[in-house]
Length: 311
Ligand code: FAQ
Image (tube, rainbow, N blue to C red; front, side, top):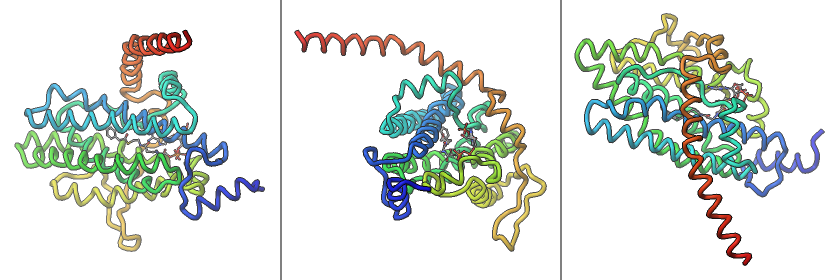
């Protein structure tokens, strides 16, 4: 049975009226949003690491400037999202501590290494491609601050995807060795990219409630299907092969049939056992520790000002 407040809340959601920070909301709605927005923010921040790894080794000055700008954009996305989460009554420090202690997640994709320059192309093309597929509908999510953050983020994200595809074009049309690198990057990033959309609908614990609350607009499998349908022709244009022998156009459904990723690998990565989980959290812990003097300085300054005011 829904309480009268809950029924009024659901009516607003159903009528596509945005929920704002001071509005009444069910505790579960607040908790789910903190989890999802917080994980999303952490993903943007941790997501800087695999690409940051290649800034010093970008092949030209132009590529270096573009990659630097992209990685900076991701820091900005993280900040918008932490601010959106803060409107729900959680602090950014608290979210960071939850990330570092392993109580909060970040996207599985960032636990895979970027081994060479072609990987930076594949990350932009596939990882940002998957990110946009998920984030465009989130511009219509029911929570106002999250939806407004998504509008700004999506504009930059589409530039990111294009820069990745541009790298892939250069590599795929380059020497035979460069084309082999592009194919190898696609081979390694294909299934991890499919995993970004989350477990199958049957395994997705949060989907039903999140869809009813319009925190999510589409199910995990719907978005995964759309991503495959969009990406296959892009791979064909590059002259590259999707590493899935079962991939076939299905006229009846108007989409591709494709192989599921290895879900046992996905759940292992979520448990902390992916190739780079330890490295990523070590890097974030070091950044947090190295920044302690800034936080201490700000606190000391605020304390001094407060004392001066009292006196
Ligand atoms: N990785 O019940 P569901 C980017 C967890 S894009 C890790 O289906 P939900 C841009 C899930 O949290 C990447 N964990 O969950 C960029 C839950 O565990 P919990 C970030 C995952 O929330 C590009 C459990 O599995 N984007 O950063 C993943 O309804 C390039 C059950 O799953 C977003 O976060 C996963 N892939 O649906 C930056 C978008 N999938 O918490 C740098 C917003 C699921 O109960 C470079 N988020 N889990 O312990 C969403 O849309 C949703 O949260 C989903 C998952 C669709 C990811």
